[in-house]
Length: 400
Image 1 (cartoon, helix red, strand yellow):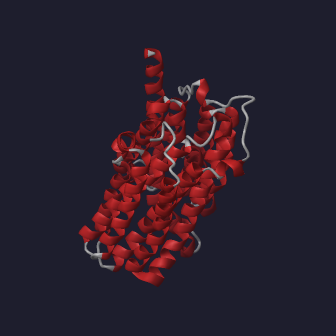
Image 2 (image 1 turned 180 degrees about the vertical axis):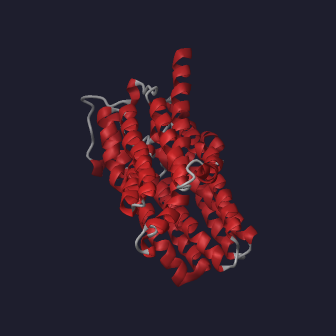
Image 3 (image 1 turned 90 degrees about the vertical axis):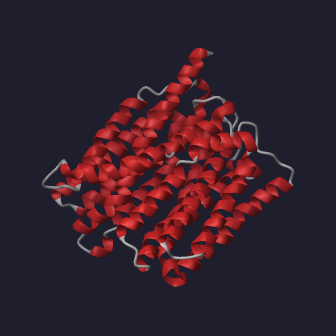
């Protein structure tokens, strides 16, 4: 038993460290790729295309990555995604900046999106390498890695610009190549137990049958809608703050508080699920998102933006971790690949749409109107949750 627990801790530690590396890379891309794109692009209107390419790469990879890992296992899949996407994409970005090639830089960001498509499954791998009774906590610990990345990511984007004097913006991408190389080494030590690997001969249900499960509907609704609401408001926030005359360092302050709100609760979210039950945590997530809307409507000062974005982050955390925990109980091992792949495909489809709508909604509705427009979406999650409870259903064991 002690050997099993030691293996569980080792595997979970590897996944947490790899998640920190992934989040540092992700924060770096979101912070820098638009600036680099502006410098390299032939048309300023294309400046944010590299970031869009990253999201598109993630959208394209999400389902294939899950199906591939179902066939070849988590370790091989993660190493492939980190090597080709993370290491390969970072190297291309460094080369593109030095060669002043916009399209090569966009390709590098596309590959980094592939990396993200694989790395998003770190949280599900945490469930594979841990016992049933601690799966929610394991998923939460992996998500908690974002707290470290909230500090390490900005440090990388600023301090590493000194590495290459001729091309300072290539420095952070050079660090990304080193970090993703370290992640490959760490992943080579990952040992997923047989219960978390594909099983031959296990009966698979058709996807429509799985998708009709009330637990699946609730899990996907909570994670996808919660993520879309969070990203839409987060994307619009810098523009809204600038319109109010707030300085960029204040925008950065708000975003850092938001990231902490997203990931710091992960240290206790699993414990809250175990103590109070998954359904109550999902309800609290809906309540927090709704409260963030009310705070955003109460004023346009720095304190209002900070409070609203912190609440937004915590609400996202509860819905995303809660939905991810519930999803692990909706499938057997042979169904894992397609179910988790469809789940993340739905999430990133909605998230991509939200990112595209953020600017339009802010321009047409204003900051107050944009936040009010989030209430019907939050209401959908709440309605599904209430119907789930009305049917007398409980979260499956291991998710509550």
